Length: 430
Image: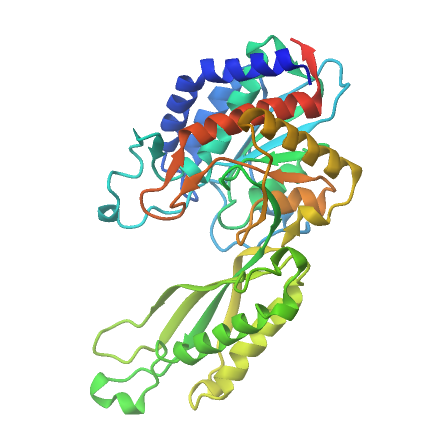
């Protein structure tokens, strides 16, 4: 890549950086939790239209994607699940095409009194932007957009088609990214700027969500001995699931990317509800679980073992053996994905291009890491034969209180992304 072009790109990012921070602040102000993303997606659609992108905004139809590999089952309505894609078509098509993917949905903010400032009133302090979703991953959406802006400011466009994606459902199913594939959006590589501190993600875990439904026998609390408490019946089942978690994390079960991690797989009992009246023994209970799986670990085999563990524990309980739990899968059924296992020339070339771009933007070699979360990268890498590079800014307290993203890190990632686009796609005059 020509050094003068690189300098011009970096200067263009710097010149527009105050505008980029303002854009991120405006975007973070939208409370785009699942089902509430429409206003934020309208904002993204306007930003893309103003810049001259070919706009595609559509309602996800479950019937169109439920037969595809990677689909996750859903319990709630999908009337409000809207994707936005902006396409920048190349005139020459002499380079390699690219998907710039990011998700607009954010996780719930939790009790407001546990935030130092309102989660949807973004503030900048000490070089950080605070607010729910600022790090995960609206800063990434901003870096993708303003990296493309930097090329345009230099009078250039990518010499291959680029598809800018703002998707929903990443935090619970990934069906938004899957819907983009079903709609025909494919490319030679994908870049997803999730907030992993300017490191390239070499591997990510898969995820399973499930509910366990229990039924007890109600009675007045004065005669509790003659009833069966459905909430308390959950305790031995949870204990058995944690024993399974320990087995799955054993050294002999870890793939190479996770060999150094003693506890990469985490089981989380995230929610429990049950009962109807304080003075009645609860007749029902439901608890929600999130369990991780390794890349290469079969989802169906994992589900089979989960069911065996729960039912075996239930059969050891005097009451539950006569009222076996029901297991319901909803949300994530995500396989793990390891970019490190992609030995293709395209993957090697894409990683090299990103490494060179990162070095130019930061002055340091690109670090690599396996993560204990999941991202939408799996759809591109597993189901579309597309190397998916996960590389984004430094953020802290994502999914927690006082979530924040480091602005100078976002600046560096934006510069690296602009340089990567120029290296990967090539350039042509506007």
